[in-house]
Image 1 (cartoon, helix red, strand yellow):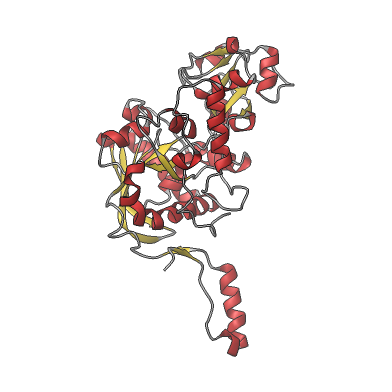
Image 2: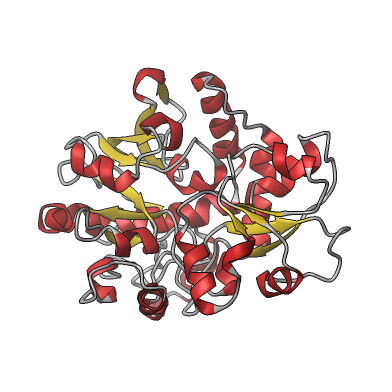
Length: 377
């Protein structure tokens, strides 16, 4: 039986017109549901995923799969609960591990290769290409349609700027983390100039605020605009943004990936699991309140210096919709990956002269074979 299915009609509908009318109503109003216990015995228990950052609403499709009976383990930077979808118990526990500072800013792929208890990990297309020889990863579903990364600037200082090329033409300094693939690609493409990139960003607002709008800075479209207007009182106003995706860097970010060597072993699990992730994306964004409250509470329980409020969570979910960070692909399916975008990134990395396995193809990096093509917004 299919894992995700709409409620069906009456087999005898042709003989009973009244029943047919009732069945049609049911088909158009019933929400997709998951079979109770469907993952028991075919997926690892607990099923463990390594993320790339603190708990936040960009990870909402994951946390939406935790039941209300969750436990936060500060020592392991993990949250674990019975796995559920739309209130249906799926038969196993689900463990979500924080990344970023919790793993010494290591990559999720390095963790899955060093810790056999981890079954899934977040992956970004560019990192998959650049690290394939050491830690190959195969993405099986993409909860986000667009990468949330952006460059922001002060619209009062630069009212006519709309994209990165405008910032290039004005020679505006852009403060970013060191070692960012997109910077090298944008320089190779002529979108930015090398002398305007300052790789000294330290993830704090101090430099941007001190410069009083003179520089631009990296961030997340679903996070920094809220913080700079509502949290950082020294700034307290809007910033303008442009997505990296819209400037020639169309990676898939925060995909759910496996080690390719585990594909055969995980095959039965992934067949049922990937549609669950797809449906969770839809369910979370249609009604994020429960999960956002959970995300806020989990951060309170971690008490690790990362502050994430209800305002942050509400802004993030709204921004993800506004900027198309989450949604269907061009074929009205959520979670699948466009191999043309993967090839575009392979070509861009080659153009930038970045060291990688030049024999790689999109099929080495992503697979849509587990995607349920009936699931979308």
